[in-house]
Length: 491
Image (cartoon, rainbow, N blue to C red; front, side):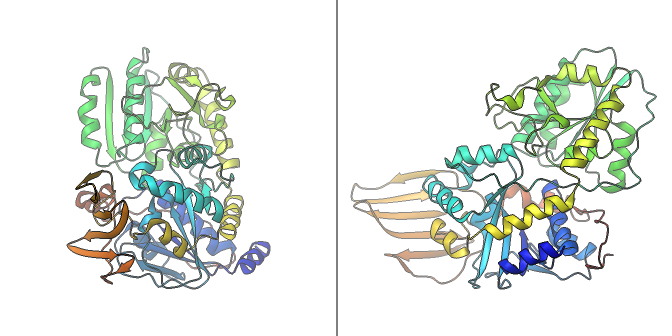
């Protein structure tokens, strides 16, 4: 503790602001609060969150840390008045949504926690190269796993330093037990994760197809734990398989309800990200799902958790070649299910997953120290970021910029990109306009015409009324870390 405190004093980090404004609960938000608890328990660094007033991080802070010195900053405010000598910790896709920060001595550390971030949607083509150089020079990148590192290096065409801050998941004391399985004629496969768009949906469909093709005399049950905007799509897709597989949708489960359900129902778990550790902590064998970027993705090859590499929490997808030595332990889906259902193998494989989880993802002291070291390295500031993006919040109020088109005479051209318009005369940019919630902001020949700051940025699937309603009483954190040293009180 004293050694970490000295490192903090040398870098003058006074407070870390965790930034990921949204309403649904998820493994990422839970991980952010685990890191926050590490800072509160083991260092003198204070904690803050930047979120919507009723966002999941703000609600979690109020409910579980009422007496802790946690500053909640309203994401929708025009300016963020942050503490001097502080640092913002944000997912890479949120960099362009950071609001105006009057304080000069505030640094930024960005986190890559997805392999399918969709950089081409989040950042315009011209911005990606500038951003890559900025992140590389400022040493402001850290990665959840090798997959995230590999993806970022490919997209940004930079070989970043391998600065890992792997996922931590706390062991549930007294909860770890093995299920007394009396259903010898069944095989229960359990998916745990949000039913979201992108790689999760593509991966889940691939799993369903594999399970359908799996030949067994046992009755097949597929439990799907989670909810999201793609739930209806999944339910409609599985209709073709319902004669062969019994599908059970539980909705979102948390805390003791989730532990009880997994313990009583899961023969084998399959997931990606933090959800894999939910199974492993309960000694349930768990297979890594794919980060599948493409629709109609199909693969029959997967990895057990204990065969993962460099903190990965998903199986290799179509983006890497099979010649990579890290994939030598890839196994066919059918073989994996057959192995785990034979004799005493379920217990053996469950123990292997548990031991891997405990040594790699169950030690908050080790992971927390990596986090503090990454905080100390970054030199990225809001001023540097603003020069890179030109427009902050980068994406406007509605969502992500995705389409560009042009029109006009050869001497004069207007380039439209989502809510932005750039005006060119003889190939030279002479003006820019951003429209946001009905307000326009102009810059002509480099001079700001309107000083009014525009509204908030959001990802539609994270702030939709349906999701906000579902998440009204749900929280990301149900249990807290063991209290040490009287760092702060908990409810």
